[in-house]
Length: 318
Image (cartoon, rainbow, N blue to C red; front, side, top):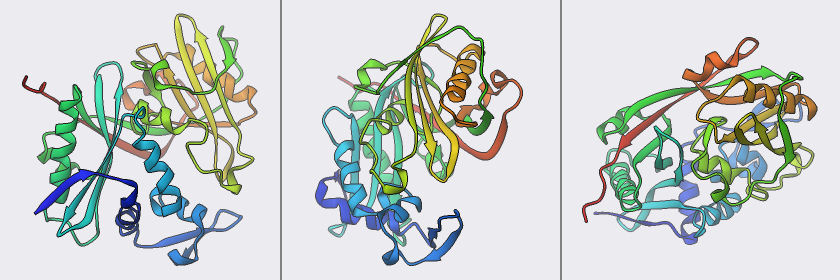
C-alpha cells in the first residue's frame, strides 16, 4: 500500500537518491565550459549542482528542504512510501498572483525512483497535492514546467500557455523612471504582484530563490554580480533582480515582479537601461508568448520553452 506523508530532514538521502536516479549520464565542466563524462563519486557539490540543482547532493539539498519547509515559506514537500521505503517525492509552493493564476499551489517537483513508474506513486502524490491546495484555499493547481503532459491531463490539468526564454541586448534609455537599491525581503511585500519576466516556476518560488543565502556560496560563484532595485515606472512599482549567469559572464538572468498587470514597453526599457548601467551586455529571461510583441525588435529566442498547465479547483465543502 502506498503511504503519502510530509517530508522530513531524515528523508534527504532518499529524496536525493530519487533525483539522482533520473540522471543517466553525469558530466563535469572544465574551466573552458566544455562538458566531459564523469562518475558521480568523482564530482564535488558544485559539479553535481550543475547536473541538476540542489537535489543532486545531500549537502546542498538539506538546506534547500529546510527553507522549503520553514513555517513562513508556504512550501510543501511530500514523499510516497511503498513497502516502507520512500520511492517518490513532490514539492510545491503556495503563492498569490493576478488572474489567471490567482491564489495558486505550483507543483515544482514530482519524481519517482527509476524503475518504480506505473505503480501509482505519482498519482498518489498528485491527489495529496491537490487536496492540500484545496485545504489551503487555492483557486488553482499549477504546473509551470509541464513535461509529462499526458500524466497531468489525466489528473484534470489543461494547458494554459507557453513561456519562452529569450535573449536581448541591454540598451541605455531616456525612459523616465526611478530606481533605488533593493534587497528581497518577506514575500508579503509583493504578494499579489504579477511576474511578467523571469517566471520559471511561480512568482513566489522565484522570489524565495533570490533571497540572500538561498543558494550555496560556491567558490565559482563568489564574483558573480547580483543587483536588485525597486523601480517606479509611470504608475507601476516593480522589483528587479539581475543575476550574472554562471559560465556566461556579462549575461544577466532577469526576474521582475510588478504591480502592473502586463509587461509594458516602458517597463522593459527601464529593465534594459538598468542592465546597461550595471555593465551587462545581454539579458536572458522567460516571457509568455502573448507578451512577445511587447519586446519590439532585437530579441532572439534561445530555443528553450516550457508549458504552463493549470486546474481550476473547487472550494472545500464546509
